[in-house]
Figure 1 (cartoon, rainbow, N blue to C red):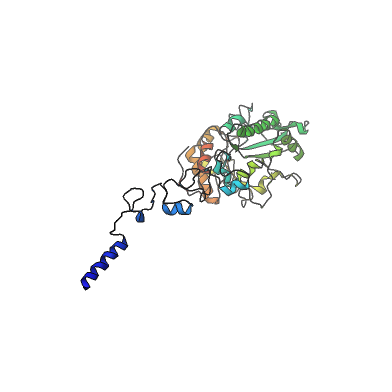
Figure 2: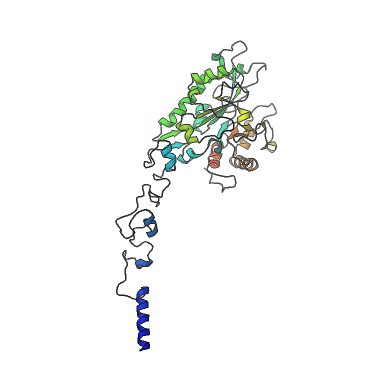
Amino acid sequence: MVKQWLVVLIVVGLMLSGCIGDEFLDMDNDGIEDNEDLDRDGDGWMNIVEIDCDSDPDNFEEIPNDLDSDTICDNLDEDVDGDDLPNDWEVERGLDPMNKNDTIVCHGLSKYCLRNYDDFTFPETHNAFATSEDGVILGTNHYTGLQAQWDGGVRAFMVDAHHLSEDETEAEDVRFCHGSPGQFPHPCKYSEVDPFEWLSLLNSLMNLTNENCSFMCGEVVSILVENYVPANHLEFLLNQTGILERVFIHQLGEPWPSIGDMILQKKDVVIYVQSEYNESFSYFHSAWKHSWDTPYGQQDKEEMTCELGRGDSSQSVWHLSNWLSSIFGTADPYKAHEVNEYEFLLNRTIECWEIMDRRPTFVAVDYWEDGEITNVTITLNKMENWDDEIPARP
């Protein structure tokens, strides 16, 4: 009698454990019993995920909503429309997080809109106006002018603002000329470029970036001015060319905004001046209070350094000077070929990033056409930290 009861108990135990029974439940016919199947209805969504997504894990016809098809259901997805912008970020700025076409693209990618201005690296041309194409014969720094530089990806420019001559000193007489005041001959005698035309073209190119884009698109531009004219004359120049209304004002000590916010607010130009103006011209940022640079003017690449040249090294915005001078102190196209070469420039920039513990905001070169300055910055901007794995060459 005891043995019979023992057999009954064993059978009942096996039945309760599911090891034996009258029915093998397999809703999706995948050969895995439902009580062991992580996706009972076979709809490609795990049971536990469906429950979290308010979807029935036992109904093949009911699957979670997933607008961007990234296998993260919408009510758990921080980027529902898959445009690389967080839902909250879009809502705060009046964009629709459920519509991938209602988005913003910054410097070619939406994700760069989230980067702060001082957490991005811009290719910069030293004496951007001093080009063969612009008719500059002595003191040439590049072959091609603004249009080619823009088309090539340059988004930061160094310029020198002078009056046309010692006798022509009105606001309308401001010119971009390469040289120092008081020298003979006057700098504008051999390197005069019309800044009204130059900056008007820049303004047009910035506008075309958005006009030629299916979404809202923009680029942030920075201009470092070696200024030898009064503040109101420079103000007149920027106002006449449409640049002034775009100028962003940064308060010293305050964090820099995101690139996306600068573009959305239509404040997408930052102006630095080497010689400080008074506080009433707040949009002309004192270059060496708001930023700093590395030394320049070396004649050999072995002399190049990452240390402080001018300015305040506690500032997060800085210029990596990457050009060499000839024995005459002018730009040297042969040496530019050496220091603009992809591997050299990339390695030097990463080394300085490591030493200074912050990415360079600008990498400035002569003869930008010779070498790969824009490809180097494309690579750098794909990196979050200097010790990240280096992405493939563009």
